[in-house]
Amino acid sequence: MTSSISSQTSGNGWETTVSQASMDAGIDVIATKETPYPQKKIIQAKRYGENTTVGGPDIQQYASLKQQVEGADSVIVVTTSEFTSSAHKRARELNVKLVDGDRLMQLINEYDAGDLVSRYVSDVRIGRTDLSVADGGATQTSKAATKMGKGGRVRGSLRRVRALTWHRYVAYAIGGVIILFFAIRILAGVSLLEPIVNLLVIVWLLLLVSVPIAWYLDMRRVRSQSEWEPTAWLYLLGGVILPFIAFPLYYYRRWKRVGL
Image (cartoon, rainbow, N blue to C red; front, side, top):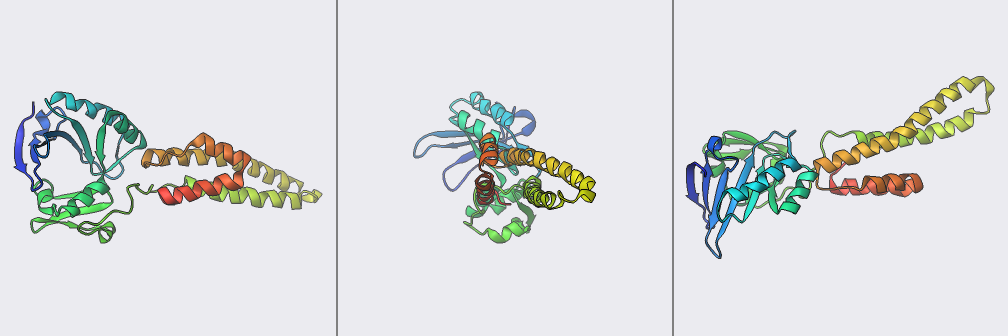
């Protein structure tokens, strides 16, 4: 059972009951609607900072909330942050609906719900947008706000992967491998430069080995921070057999899906 602290009916027919966090066993909101047919949604809200994500184990836990409320037909998890790829996978398997920070900000704009937000928070970061409350309403204060208006859209549902450098390292390392390869071939015939050539060979080998490792780490991070799930073994195999196709293809798809 939940302990209600507020209940209201929205203009689109949903009646919501906000529960007391310390007594609700994880249930934050129960939303019901009678038309055009009876519906009851269990909503779990997670207010996180931008560097904290909701993962697969969390979704596994929240999926069971439906069993606590009689007549509940689905669970919705809402976060001011982001979901990992494993969270999206578990949500599909368990029929849990997800709303990330960018989508939440979009909904606030779409339904002009700034006043509603101001009842519960004084300031919060939602997705890539800092939201502050002033004069009884919500004001967007980040650069992302300039891209969003009432009814506006955040650019794509896939979030950009932030502060990642593995993909850049791969590009630089490949360039270094190519340059060192030709440098070694040119200098190899000069006996006086043999020690330097040997050193260059060692550096070349280290760079060559580091490329697939860094590439794998980038794909792993992309999978955890976005909805795109590149198949690591297939790209790595392609990098060995057809590197001039595999690398450009990966970077093109990465740019289209999560940015560079």
